[in-house]
Length: 188
Image (cartoon, rainbow, N blue to C red):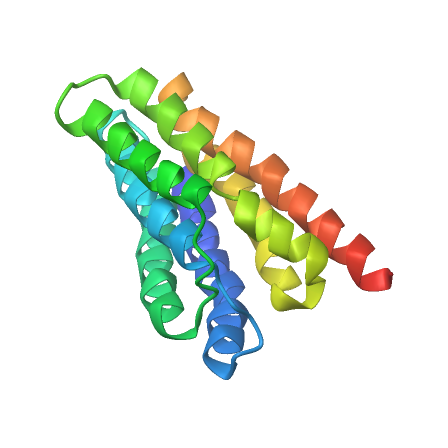
């Protein structure tokens, strides 16, 4: 397959992968963590811009699709989400603003990419905590599809660099790990 095809498949899987999550959220079965999705929205915008500016090409569109959906889930979480907000959550929001600032105002794309992805992964803490204690409050298929999607982002990239690779590689591993947590904890 060529890079454009990988991107089209990645975009399709992104939409298909998030539909059950969105549906479960609307039904009240899944309760997204408000601050996690806010942080991921800010960081998604930052990472999408970094992808486009640094030659991500077709892979950038997969990431942009995910960012748009992330913003939509954040909006849903305002009404249907888990709103237990801790000091740590506020720190993650501040870190996401710093990552955005590194990209937009200071023009440090490499550092911004690492900082944004690292912050995004750390902001997953509340979701991992909730997944461990309430494994049925998350949609397993979304994490499985995200593992595949991030792998397709890598294959669809037009240019490979630290800026374009760090995010999808890290998220492939993390989504796979969360999938395993949900499977393991649901069996208990």
